[in-house]
Image (cartoon, one colour):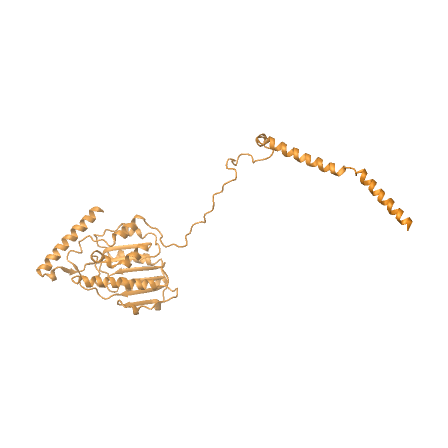
Length: 337
């Protein structure tokens, strides 16, 4: 990794020296050549198992073939795990834009970082202007998307995109205007910033966060004379971090995990399953609580004796005499009357 970064720095410095010397000598036509390869980025909100292996096997110095790229893209989109497929064409985009205009992709970097499936290929063969048309037909057929659910957006025009609120799957194709030439670096950087903001606008207005985005250039233009052989990587701080964590679902808000319960803890941890349960007839228990048991038994017996005594106690003689006297007095009063 350190060796690759060293080569990147050396090649960038070498390219800068040559371009600067050509500008000083007025050789503008010699510092740019026709693009032989184009960059390709794909990211998806949901995790698609097995895709990360393609990134691990890829060498950014080598050119990725169209057939293999098409196979990978079809494998990803055939899962139909997204509610929106955004196909973005940035005419004239080169891999050097991700180095010299790196700060123009703030929204794009954030969306890639938040995605569960990510792929990037710095050098792919020229795809052809009808590449998205073929891919649209494949996704439409595989995911059963109706023709009226295909949205074409021309240019960086905010009025060209009409938000929707239903849950139907859609294919959104965005065709940006061609980027300014590499010689007009300030205008080129400004255009990339505008395209990045427009992408954020579109993604923010899609009712579902589950989307798959593809960004490339279907209309190659010019590139630096040494850009094709310069080992430039696209957002290494993001994609290298993704490789470290392998495949992981970052956006699963309904986790398929069993609920957590408190661990079962018996009241008496020292009692094992093969031992006897605690009982009043247990010898050890009686031995340890002998005095308490004797006190309880004595108190209980005294209570029973007291209740029996109250039940069999004879009536008091004094009370009987008082009752007889009262009866005699009552009889005498009746006779006098």
